[in-house]
Length: 389
Image (cartoon, rainbow, N blue to C red; front, side, top):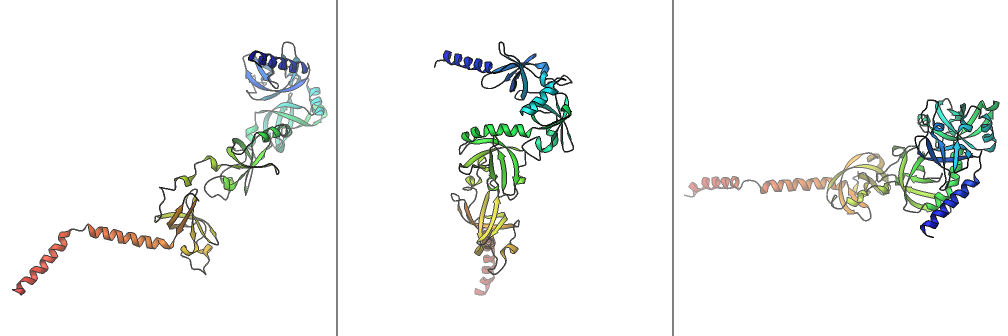
């Protein structure tokens, strides 16, 4: 298909889509541009509709939406393209439309006015509605103020007293959108993919991250950083947007394993040339195992002190003698950077210091003035000479 045929096919597809949309129909779309008088709204595929900017303003005359926001509007004309209006949903006589939306399960647009006890006050069609705290987002424990002033799409879950008592849910709309996108999102994820996600919950073993379409992956605590961490909340918080790497996929169990430290430089890459066997180093004990003591020399670089090199008697309690968090001096016995291993010793510290002292003494002796010894010898010889005579 050449370029001209492709353009014709695109236009034909758009025209067919426009014909399927009828006047009076309520549709959702995404704002793609806002001009002085009209805004363009994407309504799916390559189809676009127009809406007057005046209909995007609040009571104070300020535009309450931005490019990329989703809106719900009514089709008022299909001649020469699609023309939308929000007046049917935002006008004073829109209670009937709200009731129809409630019964049909359609999403309506509303502005979060303020946070109140137990949830939020939302303005929909110039009427007040209540959104429970648990229904404002799919992620809990977010800052309440971050939703104030935002325009969202809501589903009406309760319609009472002719629309004077409305209860709405944004979470229901988000979850429906996530389900629709979940299959496509999973198909696009492969091992090694680097993507941005949002932390949905933090547990003692790690954090769950929404990587799009409601699909969640697990960022295990061991994959958060090169330094050993026991508390994931020290690194990430609920609601944080982070960049992660896909490490493993388990299609059978629908599990996705993510990594954060893989996007930072590996500290073991600089070990050769930075650390040398025989050096004395300072470190912090991170944990005690039955076979030895682990010491962190710097974030991400750990070495092992075998029990025989710990300086602790065999029948003594090693954890009590060398508790986690203790600062110690160690000697590097040997290094295997490829295997990410380093063997350390506390016993060898005293020997290394004695060796340093001997070397220092020898260097001082070598640099002492030769004349001092010569003068003493001359005096001894001078004292003995007269007796010989």
